[in-house]
Amino acid sequence: MEHFLKQYTDRFTDFSNKHISDLILYSGGIEQCLPNYSYSLKSRDYHLITFVSQGKGTFEIEDKVYDIKANQLFIIPSGYWFKYTADADEPWRYSWIGFLGIKSNFIYQAAERHQFVYDCQNAKQYEKIIATILESSGDTFSSFLKINGLMYSLLGDLTEEIGILNQSTNQQLSTLARHFMDLHYHDPIQMTDVAEFVGVHPNYLATIFKKETNTTPKNYLTSLRIRKAKELLLETRDSVSYVSQSVGFSDSLTFSKFFKKETGLSPLHYRKEFQHDPHSI
Image (cartoon, rainbow, N blue to C red; front, side):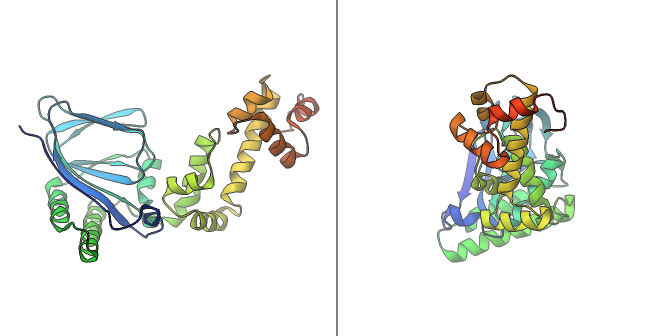
């Protein structure tokens, strides 16, 4: 068995404009893997759907390992760590599309349900469309339109078969953004990071988030960090420096100024004032 790989990567659209597009193809390809071939990545900047047409292997995401066989597909949302490995005896052949844009967030709906693997009737059907994408690839505007039209056709077929696009994307943005901030408030994240995770422009995220939650993403993150800092100050003996790092600040001075601005008290004064008050958080 010989290794085979053919792929396409969009070079027509500037990457910064992809996130504010409705839906745009970023990459696609077909590969016949060698036995035990393994690949992992901390995260991608775009979503991926992979269709297995032959053989088998394993796919790992969110600390769970899935055994994948022919006529199954798996999805990898932007920002998720993953690993996949071809079987030693029957290494898989797969095809894939990578895409992003405002209307691509249906992928996160599946991720929220922890549903990353699906059965499909005929993975070769999707591979055939991807093969046509590869044949049509080029640096001209006409080829750009053709391959994105083929991607829409593929996703349309996939929607009819397994129905992963049923819910409104806009209704999910605030939930996804809050989920990301709840998991990463202890990191020095900015609103651009949140917007990148959900796959939209920061201004668009701010508009939808405010409409759905009556607050802004920045205010939500601020309130979250203050609440977590209060909990640490009152429930632990951790230093202000450690608390500041635990809620996403690189130095305690910046954190102390931030905390006093939001609460009217310095971290140490807050701890002294409310350490034994269970209603203060």
